[in-house]
Length: 337
Image (tube, rainbow, N blue to C red):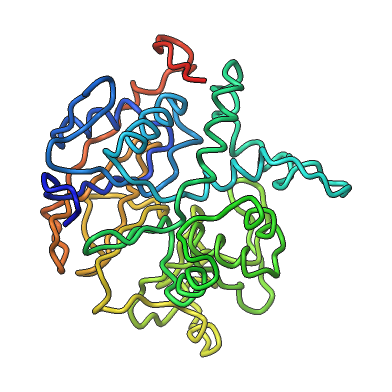
């Protein structure tokens, strides 16, 4: 399964969002122990689907825990949209434009990153180092017998990306180019890290609980033969009933993606699922079960099987008591740089 003769399997872990205490409990449940201060398993490797940062109680601790596992060769990671957003938010522009940063420091973008910025406020050198590390994280993984992407596997885009770059990583030039909404670079990052979307029918718009008005809505890329908009919607706010029950047009159907049934098993996060973890299809598994919303932090124990099984999920419930007021309280000195 790998060039390492002792490696017998992988544990693919969903969106963490700063829930480091839950992550440590999950790793222990999976049989990982600290070796020289870094979690390791004698026969397995962890694989993280991204979104380590933002929203949660111990973002700094979670970032270093994952970083150290990856650097030690005990884990792999695929970039999440929150890592991508953070890189762009922290990248200053020098092109003379009115905008100072690649991701504008407006109210919405700053609100999304508020907890991360606060928890690193006294550790700016660390934060700058981690931003540099985030840029090196692959945007998809192809490991023995399976694939990993944060939000959506678009095979055509990925094949073109590999043909252009001969890699699964971006660089600073690619990052900057991705700020152009009409570019190939934007299309890659938006599709792989945020997923697919459709425009609301008949020029409609909706206002979410966050106060933002949207004319597009995020969609599931795995729906089988959907009939109405409700069959494909994914987003924090539900569609109004008059939109949700509306028949999909042929034009919108033609825009939908699917994942081939004979393709390798694919693991992803991003979609805020709830309830008991279960596979979407025999070769599709979402691992985001809303940990930071007091849901579950979920792993799938992959051992080379072509057909995924619900009984391979391992998970723990996230305890609200793990959410203190500040990440700086009671945290050991993690300074590295």
